[in-house]
Amino acid sequence: MGKKSERVRDFFRCRRNSKAPPKEEEDTADKKDEAKGDQDDTNKKDMEIMPPPLGEGQISTYFHVGACAKECLLRGFKLGSWQLSCTSMTNKGIQLSTFGEAYPKINDVFGGVEVFKEIGNFHFSHSWFTTHEFLSELGLRFASAYGIFNTTIGTKDEVTLKSKLKCGFELNPIKVDLVVPIYKEPLVMGYVVAAPVDSCLFGYRTVYNLEEKGFDMHAFCLGYYNGQSEVGLKLENFKNLRGSIFQRIGENWAVALKANLYSAENVKQLSVGAQYNFQNGTLLKVRLRDDSRIGFVFQKNVNNHVEVMYHFGFDLADPKGGAHRFGASLDFQC
Image (cartoon, rainbow, N blue to C red; front, side):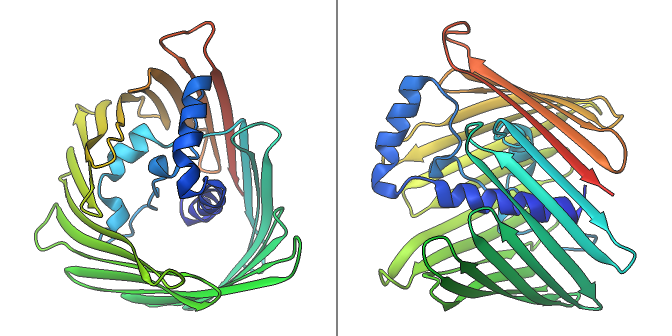
């Protein structure tokens, strides 16, 4: 539903990333969740960025590799108990957004309010979150370049301040995005992608930790998409190779697969799914994971201003006694 919804989704994603268990605790957390039979999407290994739709003439980002498969196999299946967002525009051109969700459990609630204003090539936003944080952004965007200064103030136990600069440019066929720490931000992040021919994308992504003085990530990607078929490959830290396939079948059907093709730590992950597009703003999806979790998602654009989504999942190996999961999402654009 456009950039307004994408900003709110990014807030939810950042919050979930911040709640992911520390690296040394991941294995323990995974074992506990598998014992419960619950469908936990808070683990870092399953945290993928859902890219926003591209504008006309824009070059795909690193995160658009395998985007159709991610939309089919991830979007909606990560819902908690509920999610609600409402965005409206005042007669002064000021965008007001309120949002909230219960994730992963019904008593784990997060939400916030954002004020957003565009003036020519500039934009300003200020957000408040229930995590006792304030986020302010000042951005400047041109046709082929942009820069956003981002400041976060925390007030929960003590006053904290963090700031960073997001910037990037496009020079066909190359696109570069960077996140540069300004104050109290430990990570330098960035990627470069190139689309030398239509339908193909090559890229490299890196993350450097200033506190530990070392690289956290080296990643290479290769993507292909021609409107009907999509193939994506990502090699991370020369230890993990992930791949995805998405294929449209006629105007209504599509199938998708995501898998860890190789892992030095022997992490196995496989998801297969399908979707049916009713061509009236309604989409029905099903996904089966390697741990026997099966889920269903129903998406509906009621009109240009309202989108609803429902999710239901259970353990196929134990449909009655295994864990069940329900989720609902409402998105209003006024």
